[in-house]
Image (cartoon, rainbow, N blue to C red):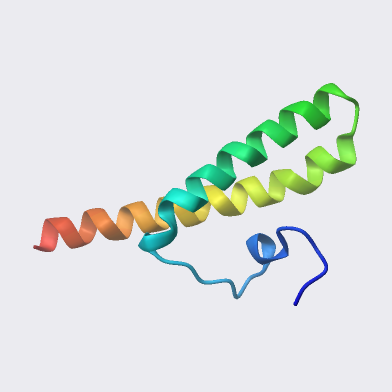
Amino acid sequence: SCPHANACLTCPVFITGPEFLPELREQRHRTLTLIEVSSGNGQTRVAEMNQQVLTNLDRMIDEIANDEETAADAG
């Protein structure tokens, strides 16, 4: 149990898979919205913290998408 919201998304040992791609994309959308709203409200620290979450989500989504493309090309 972790008391930090979205801590798994910034953890270097977090592992996910293609079955979670829809959830990762939805989390990315929510994170973008949070960054935009926070920035607009002058809450720069909240925006900065969520920028790392966004970067990690983008990396995970890209890796899963690339793995699926590679598997499709091999098949």
